[in-house]
Image (tube, rainbow, N blue to C red; front, side, top):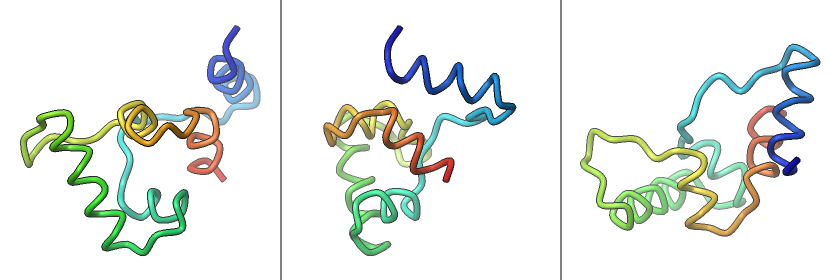
Amino acid sequence: MGRVSQIMLNRIETGVVMSRLIIYPKEISSITGKNYKSSWHLLLKIKKHYAKDDHQFVTIKEFCSYTGIPEAEVIAKILH
């Protein structure tokens, strides 16, 4: 079982479940240590990379794929 799957299984067993898929600039700021505006610009770069329209969201999986940060670490940071 992969690390992300194990973390999600642990969250389900403990009653803490990640109930959403998207990531926000404030969370990116917390993860990367960049300020809010830089995080917002990074989010725009990710949207452009994935050819998303302005009204579409960036998922946690897309953020992780683009930045190379393991999904389990991002989820753990968002939940804490």
